[in-house]
Amino acid sequence: MPFGGPNSERALILAPRGRDAEVASKLLQEAGWPTLICADIGQLCAEFNNGAAFGVIVEEALAMENLKALAECIKAQPAWSDFPIVVLTGHGDTPARNELANRLQDLLGNVTFLERPFHPTTLVSVARSALRSRRRQYETRELLERRDLLTRELQHRTKNLLSVIQAIASASLGEGERRKTFFNRLHALAKAQDLIIEGAARGALMTDVVKSALESFGTRVFIDGPEVFLNPNAAQGFALIMHELATNAAKHGSLTAEAGTVSVHWSIDVSAAEPIIVFRWQERGGPRITPPKQKGFGTVLLERAVATSGTPPHFDYSQEGFAYEVRATLAQQSRPE
Image (cartoon, one colour):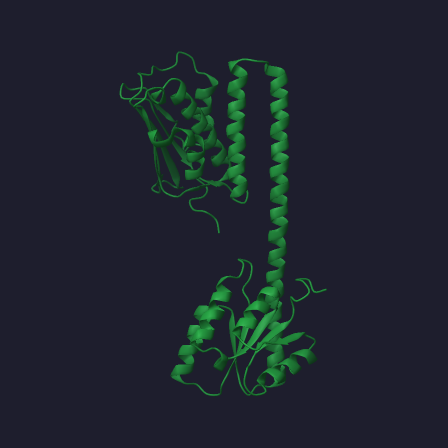
């Protein structure tokens, strides 16, 4: 069986008039490739979805309606696929033909033009190049399937590890507020892991990290910031920061008051040597918060959860409401393709 599947190396041929389809099919079969002559664009698209290495299409078969249908078919192919198409053109060089060639490449992508009449070895050579390109695509698909498998396995192992940590903590800490606080932080870390896995293990969107921590507070929370894709370390760090800030606000800060609100804003500072994400948490409408007399683990976490740009996080206990700001180094700014 071919590497890409049972139909992965066959050539689909569309040449509804004359003997072009018969000639092309015979030449390709003699070169060792299976072929299928399609009656129309609809059949070609259906067979493409069932598996194929490349297509051979005469230009006169690509009238406006057919071209639109084929373009939609090509557009719907998976990300790893770039289906090669060999277009058999007529002899001569005219403005209309050049315009059609440009349009075909724009709509269909991986297109090679072969002028008729052609020498048999020329068609075989072009077909061999198309097949080689397709095989590389199958290899890419295989690597993506292995990556997905490893990602799922990593997610499973991570959840098992967190369960083990929870069991150890449960036996070690006993009952009480200390145990509850630890478990809540562990759950925040687990939720961050889920977001990272959803991001193909490469990180998570800042918006998702923030919303995940604040989803239970509804309209009392205002979120504003550009689309920023955090690397895994930053995503975990901000998940812990968000959990700590939200917990404190719900226990002691603005979210204890009926009219209390929280504003979360972040922006990108590109003036530094490397991009910096500037994150700010601002509470309003709650009770007056005084600075803690002793530095607890929560404060240490807010200071160290993310790699800073050299400037330590700022804690503001002003009368208007508690505020927190951190400038963190950022490895990624946009979602990876």
